Length: 477
Ligand code: SIN
Image (cartoon, rainbow, N blue to C red; front, side, top):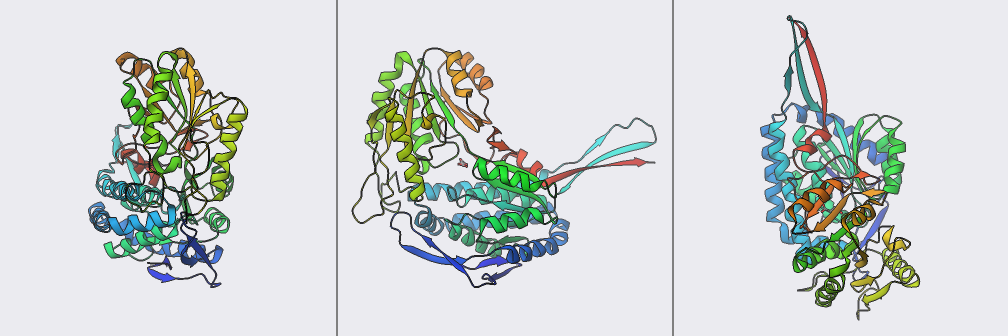
């Protein structure tokens, strides 16, 4: 297991010698210690990335693409090992970890190809003796601050396109899940990424984040995490006008119309809600069900939830693992208690699952019926395995309530009516809409939000814009 940081092609610890421990959230067992880096090491990584930039930028997109494709292949080759590491430090079921490695590799593979299609333009000039050329060039030294809920994919969907565009990068992974990030760094080296092009530093989020934005060499920062931290980063980015991509919190509505295929809707909700124990930014957080099918939908959902197996992520057949830490489970408890106190009916779960020999960090998959906008669960991101059900009477009412949120990341709805499908998809104020689809994430599509869910897009051809500057040349003949 790789535990040192990658700076300028070398493996090293913190100057201070300080380390911090990474533990398994299912057992509280220590897994490893990694360097606790801060400002000094961040500066070293930035300087290394700046030195590596001219050489990397000068390579052809084909050259960079070949290295990235090799990286994607190495990731798939190491899928089982990486997945086991991810489950150990993050807790998600092994099948999900394997799926995440494939998802993460797909971003690298996609970027390897997209890098070859960074086209410029010629624009008709207003004088006969002039030509206007539009160039798209790499932004330069970039940085990524990534979360614990997707320890691999949130890195590669920034790193892949940055490298494909000709940028270099400093990656700061979450404190809870640095081991997957360091394993990816090792594969970058094996794939032939030159020294300094990718640097991975672990440690003090505040010190590292502050230096990344105080240092004028860093021209772009991409962050996935909470809206609260996104705001701090945006304030700090003002110093150097550092470009930002922010993929922040969400509070996804999930609408089930009376004409929906209810079995498909239940299946979609199970995928959208219980992936990673409800710890994703695109998790369904408010489930609106049209009155005539509400009770039937609820009954079918209860049956599906009763079939979920809870336990350690590395046990065969487990679908629900531990939450990431004690604060996470305390928040889920607070939301369920608040909802129950305000009149919600607990139709399933509603308590911790105590499992012999394991940490007290498992929460039963929960269904709350009769929820209202006054409840915390309907306003704040729960980040846990809780389904709040809300009855609605008509389409306009459902859309208004679905849009009544400061967040705008993902929304879902189920209907068999084609006209309604287009109408609702257009009316939802969200960056991602799953129409009869509970699992819309894919490397080909532009993932990202509106409103307090941030800005910038990851995936698809759109992600390349995040790592490119536009320049025009006005050429007088
Ligand atoms: C997230 O929760 O931030 C990412 C989810 C995804 O990529 O599907």
